[in-house]
Length: 230
Image 1 (tube, rainbow, N blue to C red):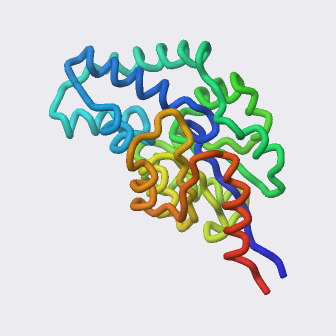
Image 2 (cartoon, rainbow, N blue to C red; image 1 turned 120 degrees about the vertical axis):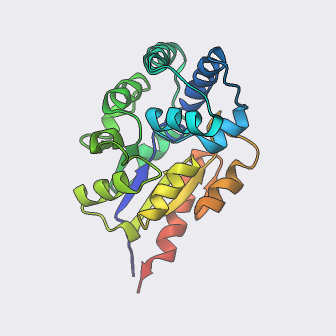
């Protein structure tokens, strides 16, 4: 008997590194300075996982507010500064990556330069040589919740989407991976988790959810059992 698992894809922010809490806190602070008040739980459930430009456009549309273009530069400068002093990797990530015996990669809506910087800070970059994929590089309108970045990574790494497992922490990320025909494990172990987080990920199409990275090997084994060929 053999089991089929071609590839494990990790989102980065909120899955490998505990960066979402930093980004959300900074974003809410900036929005408040421009007269936009959004509750933390609402923001996490409705806007997390989008690219920055899509996030701001969604807020402009849904809240009916005008936000200056300068808010983008203000956010990214503050984010990199906060990363330098506060960024940590998700507990268990180092152990899980060190033990993985199958191909794995990153698919993120963050820019390649931001991914390079943040992964270097927490000493995870060396785990992903030539296997870090940014939706920003694909062009406008192709970030999550669109499936493009997942399908691109699978093509480059010669993986069948049906035999690919994705670890995602956002509704938009789960939606994107599901649209790509992949099986998704929802992750709720980041500091930005909120009430009904797991339920929302399951509703978006997650196969299961885990609250700790230490649970991932068990879910990988369960996926392999499900796909075992006799």
